[in-house]
Image 1 (tube, rainbow, N blue to C red):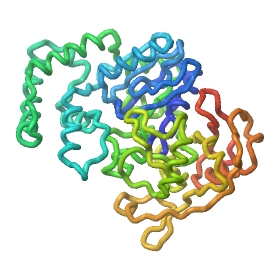
Image 2: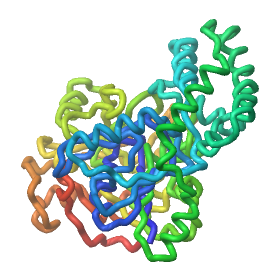
Image 3: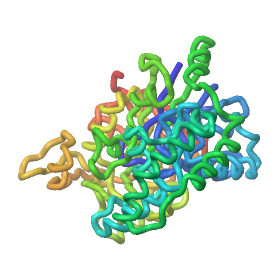
Image 4: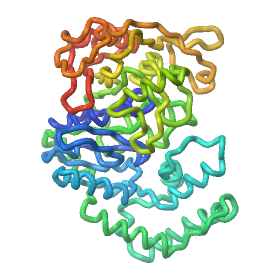
Length: 432
C-alpha cells in the first residue's frame, strides 16, 4: 500500500514526526518534491535530528530511503546530512537516488541570493537554497539530470557551454557578478558523480517491483498546501507541488496506488517567511509566548533558524488544505503546547468586504481577509504521557472535536509530544 504524508497549511506542521512514526511499519520511504529549503525535525531513540533532504524514515534498519525524481537534489547537502545521521549513531541508511532527479547547482544558490538582493524590500523571503532558480531551469529544460553525469565528456561539456552562455548574460548585465566557466561547472558535476554514483537507481522500476511484492511505501511531502504554486498563496509559494497527487509524479508511481493520505495540521498555526497569514497573532507578546513554548524547542525554522510567525488554528485554511490533499486522515500535532492557555481562539471564518466566508480565497481576496474567531476554554494542564483519547481533559477533547467539525475531515491521530510514540489514535465521528 502507498501512503502519502503531506501538510495542510504553510509547512512546519510536524510531518517529520508522523513519517518517522509510520515508517516503523513501512518498507520504503520516498521524498518526492522540494529541496533542502525546509526541514523536518525528528525526535526518537537516537536523539534529535533536523532532516532537509533525507526521508524521515532513515532511522530504521529495515527501510529503504529514496530521493525521488521530483526532488531538487543538492548532492553535497544530502551527504553532509547522511554523515551527520550516521555520526549520531544511526545505522547507515539504505539510500537510493533516482537517475531522473535533477541537481541543484552552486550557481542556483548564487542566483537565489542575487535575486533576493536585487529585489530588496520586494523579495519573496527565500531561504536562498537555490530552489526557485533550480525549478526554473528544470522547466526551461536547461537543468542537469543525475543520468547526465554518465554521459560522454564532450556531450556534457557542450551542454554546459550552452547553459552558462545564458547564465553569464544575467550575471554580467543584471547582477554584475563574476561569470561561470565550463571547466568550473564540469568539475563540479564530476565531483557530484563521484559522490552519488553508488546510490543511483531506476526508482520507478524499483517501485514497480516493490508494489508487485506487496511492500508498504510512504511518500513524504515538504511544506504544505498553502505553499503549492498552483493552489497556494501565490506568489509567496514554493516552486514544486506540495500536494499528495504530485507524489505519484515525483516518485514514478501510478496515481491509483495512493490509498491513504495523512494530512498533518498543527493545533495552532505557524509560518516561515512572507505571505498572507490571516489567523496571525498580532500581539507580539502573545505570539512570542506561543513561539517559545511551541514545537519541540521553540518555533524556529529547521533550515534557517528564523522565528516562525505564530497564529491560532485556522479552520478555513485547514479545510481547504485537507480538501486539496484529499485527506483520508488528519494528524493533529503539538496539541500539548496549548496547555498553558486559559482560552484558545480558533479562526472559523474570514470577513472580506463585510461578508463572512468559510471558503479559502485567491491571494487577491485573501489580502483583504480579516479573521473571525471563536474562543474555546483551555484545559490548563500537561497532556503529555496520555495514551488514550478518553483520558484527555474534556476541554481538550472539545477543542479537537470543534476543529474537526469545522474542517470536515477526520482527525484520527493526535500528537501530544515531540517523541516518536507520543501519539493518540482515535475513532473519528466523521465518515471518510
